[in-house]
Amino acid sequence: MGRSPYCDSSGLKKGPWTPEEDHKLLAYIHQHGHGSWRALPSKAGLERCGKSCRLRWTNYLRPDIKRGKFSLQEEQAIEQLHALLGNRWSAIATHLPKRTDNEIKNYWNTHLKKKLIKMGIDPITHKPMKNNNEEMKVKSNMNNSTLSHMAQWETARLEAEERLARQHKIQPIPSSSSEGRVESPTTSSTATENCQHLAGESGVADDLPSSGSGSAESKNYGWPDTILDEFLRF
DNA sequence: AATCGGCTCAACCGCTATTGT
DNA sequence: GACAATAGCGGTTGAGCCGAT
Image (cartoon, rainbow, N blue to C red; front, side, top):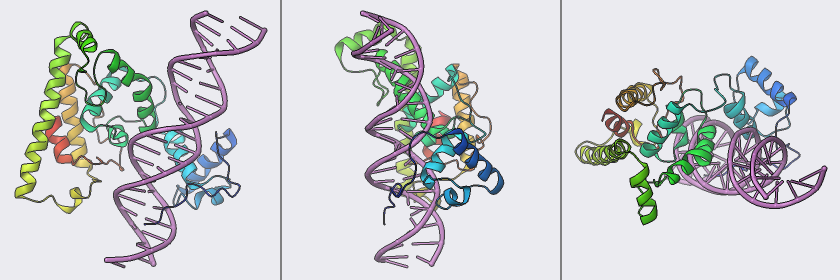
């Protein structure tokens, strides 16, 4: 499997995009669609590599992007989804309409991770940190419902994993879901609904997507939808 | 006013996955 | 099946901003 170089360093521009470049990219995609990203820059008259164009489009220029501050609901949804999916930003992004994986990743790294650490929660495991001082802080700062809620999430995750493992021993997963990258808008929306249900019960994430978040590209990387569903059904 | 340090976020880089031949 | 091309993901970087000193 040959790896393509990021961008040939043959005079291609790097760094921040100018409004003129944005305009060229927008105009081209609006007229022709992006097609092959590799071929796009020359067709659009841009001295950028295709990868750079794709990134600019998906992270900034796409019309269905919501920019600006994250709401409390979005914040809580990210926390819950991260507890469930880990650093699978694109998978998390499919459950947060109009937010890009890059934006969510940035927000996690700059805000949420610190917030959890401050609360004495390990941002990786989403469990209270073992450190005594931190644990004391957790005990005094976190309310019981938050703790029990997190424990429920973790328990449910483990149960779902176990159940799925058992199931797979009996019946192998169909090829579509065993390939790691799963495209299934149906189950995605089910998961979303369940997430909404869960969020509703715990009083968070009221504005989670009610549809498949407009994601024709909706994928649950790594986590098969069955696990996600199981977990969110909890 | 200068400078220092922390923070944010757009963009880059390197890798894997997928698709086509 | 092997290989190449392309797409997409997640980690990291660095320029710019802003508040503190």
